[in-house]
Length: 173
Image (cartoon, rainbow, N blue to C red; front, top):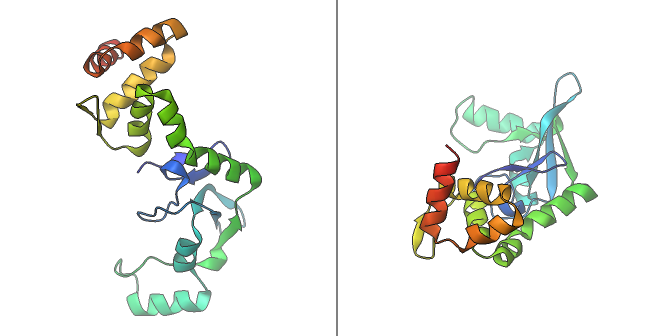
C-alpha cells in the first residue's frame, strides 16, 4: 500500500485505511507526536482503535516493555501514550477519509482509466484488457490522460492499453 497525505495533513494508507502495519481497518483516530518542547510533530497519522490500543501504552506498561526487551528491536513496537496526542478525526479529516474510501466507486465509474488509477493508488499491478500493467506505467498513463483536453482524452481512452502505455512513455521522457 501507498500512504497518502490528505489536504488536512492526515496521513493514511490507500482507501482511508489505518497506517498500522498491514491493517485493513479504516482510520478513525489521529495520532501526533508531542515534542519535548511542547510543539507537535508535523506528521499526523490516521490509525484504527485496535492499533492505537496495542501500540500506545501507559508509562507503566512502557517501562515493563523496556525492562523486558531493552533497546532490542525484537518484540512489538510500543510507545508511551503520554508523548502523543490521540484524538478522534475532525469533521474535515473524517470527510476526507470517507472520500478516500469511496475511491473504488469512482474508479469503476471512470472505466479503463479508473483501472489505471486503482493501480496507482494501491501500487499493485493488474491486468487491464489482458495486459499486465505496473504502477509506474499506470502513473504515467494517468498523468498523460489528466493533461489532455476533453476531445483528446476521449481519443486516448479509446486506444488499446498497450498503445496507451507506449504513447505515455514516449511523450513523458
